Amino acid sequence: MTLLTLDFFFVAGGCVLAAVGGLIAADAAHPKRWGSAAFWLLLALAIGAGKWLSPTVVGYLVLGLTALIATKRVGAGHGGGVDPVVLKERAARLGNRLIWPLFLVPTVAVVGGLTLEWVKIGDFLLVQPKQVAQVALGIGCFAGITLAMRTTGEGPRVAAQEGGRLLQLLGWAVLLPQMLAALGGVMGKAGVGDEIAHLVAAVLPVQIPAVAVLAYCGGMALFTILLGNAFAAFPVMTLGVGLPFIVKAHGGDPAVMGTLGMLSGYCGTLVTPMAANFNLVPARLLELRDDFAVIKAQVPFAAAIWVFNVVVMYVCVFRR
Amino acid sequence: MIKLIGLVVVAVGFAFRMNPLLVVVAAGLVTGLVAGLAWHEVVTMLGQFFVDNRWLTLPVILMVPVVGLLERHGLQERMATLIRRAAGATAGRVLWVYQVLRGLTSMVGMGIGGHASMVRPLIVPMAEGATATKLGGVTDQARAQIRAHGAAAENVGNFFSDDIVVAVGAVLLIKAFFDNAGVDVPLGEIKLWGLPTALCVIAIGWWRYRRLDARLARSAAKPAAAREVKGPKP
Image 1 (spheres, chains in turn cyan, red):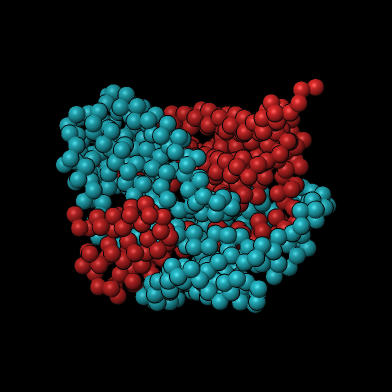
Image 2 (cartoon, one colour; image 1 turned 90 degrees about the vertical axis):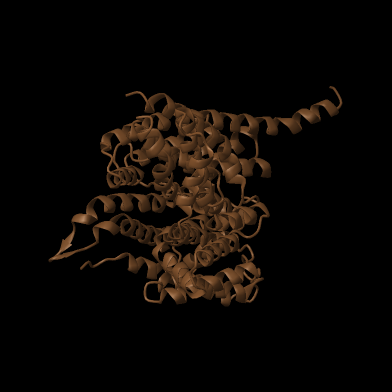
């Protein structure tokens, strides 16, 4: 048994979302008042109480959230921004004290991640070893919000309101990473990965070493672009193309192949909207008008790094 | 082949710029139904995967009140003020330094950083502040470029220096995969072969952010040059 589980933080997250939904419902001037309030309140339920609801109920909740988005009933509130002159005055008054809460979060997360595993109260572990990193980050966020409220002298209501302002900028994007993981799961169960690996092996002349390397690195990138996750692509491509054609047929070094193959997959992550938490969510968060702006900035990076990976793999993998 | 129809839904949906959430949910439903599951089963599966992956969304939800509150009290303005004091700071240099630092922490397996907790509140205001000081202002277009590259610096720094010193994520996954497949691969070698790419990424970053700086300088210089040509000569 453990005393502090991740569930506690899911409930806390649910409370934040519920507060955001409640504040929207109370805001008569909100352009999409009821649709938005319903969206954040339903999401609060799915995140906060997800563990105790039946998966079927959560599934229908998710469909409900999607329906609200698809029918354009969810939107951001009216700015609520502070006058720039006032902001400058406030910034001058608080100075560097404004920065500490932001550094407190990762500091607590790192220190907690290293130590919480060993904390015992009586015979009970404080935290389950598998959850240590996430629980530590959760504690870090709590420490951060406490310090931020002390520094600024604001209460939880303003914190929820300001958090809501940023969450509404994100809108549907906040849900996307989770839904993509769900899609990946469904595709995995349906056997989509094996199908693709067979296709690559059947279509390309992988008996030539250079083609095998290209097919493996290209397949890692392509499959990651389609599924949005290099970790999902890795076992499929390595079983289907890497191991049989690079290691077994041509005697390649599996350490070189596996590492550079994974890194080639990351190049795919940089250019796909399917990796929403890395590419689309930040575009929203940074208030960029083009949802694909981050991807566009990353394409040259991805191309250059991918070519480098292929060259290093080809030069080094068959060395021994 | 019919199983791949979910990927077709995704490709077509994104190509026509339909709402990504709708596209993804539709693709999941179609893939499940084509694989022979009943409607009810597919919805249950979606619900189960949603619950299992809640940890993906949680950090953002818990972090936004902290960032929002500090922004309301002038955090971004403060960062811009700080960077103004650093002589020689440019948007590109700020981003390059952040990418390298992000890479170094990620090398020892620490997840310091993030779009919500670092890029929006600290890095972007510093990069924009540096540009404002150096070039006398930031246009909307320059702002968009700086922000997109800021997000890129976070991603690139995060991805390509994984676990080279302390293994936590990807390296362990690779090791576990090879163990399961019955291939003997030492952990140390997997870590080592990540190093060339990590160094290459620092160099590529240097080139990319230098180009960003050059582009920002050029677009700031243009209107002034145009005015000179038109205006009457003294």
